[in-house]
Amino acid sequence: MKKREKDNCVDHKEICKKYSTNVKKLISAWKKGYSDMEISKSYGVEIPVLQQIKSDLELAHRRKRMEKKKNNLLFSHYHT
Image (cartoon, rainbow, N blue to C red; front, top):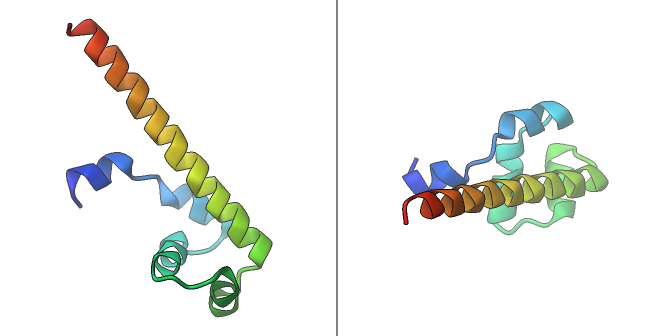
């Protein structure tokens, strides 16, 4: 895994456990351009659950970016 990917990585295990599904496969399907309907039929996950998983992932990534931004600001403040 590249350093940039590792820094932006979200812990999928927690989300997998919460929804009892393989989130990495869902993400892969979304990246390949499959619709929520196709993914729902393929993996047996209800569409509202897919939407909630997507929201949880977006929120987790947003929190990670905000944390990184905050740390960068603190670091730059102390090293100027």
